[in-house]
Length: 250
Ligand code: 13P
Image (cartoon, rainbow, N blue to C red; front, side, top):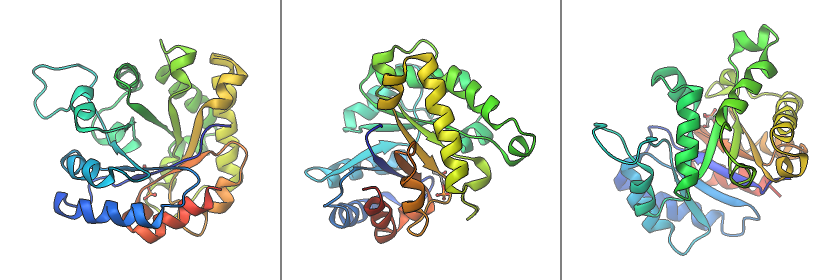
């Protein structure tokens, strides 16, 4: 299965002035990690984060990017800008961006293609709302999100993409999907990727679970066959909690 990756998504938390010390703490408590450790930070923290992570196991990611190379897009940040800072990963299509900032499956696709073309590793988020789950259309919706996100992406590039399954109803609610629910969707995602590309390619793609993952429930989720890591919000803001999740990814 895909390479294990535990990534923190700080969202709109932490200040640039707090970043270096926190990244150093994370690097210290995760120095024996047997998986890839990533901290995705607000744009304004990235420069400090990259400097603090230099020479450690910790990789740095952004939480968004624009799909154009440059131009009149006030307030936006390009892939080249992220690469110039030394950023390695970028979260694309988080449900909060879909909900509050008009992110669509089409922009997710354009951003994923742009990130790949510049050597950034995209973490592409998909997930259903509680209403959609209750209507029994979770896998239909996820299939559309995955197929649209991977449109016009070659098999070689697809293998570099990280998919994060984040049920919206589990984000920041303390209501984690059960390991069985998470595995059911993650294995469904791998099946869809296998049909789009080939089963061997699909096996190489890292599929994360995200949504109230914490030190207590991480091991059970990460033990599932098709869950190759986590995208962690709240619990990534405390180094020791984040480290426990990293330790669970064995
Ligand atoms: P929480 O871990 O706070 O539920 O957030 C999950 C998430 O949205 C990560 O991207």
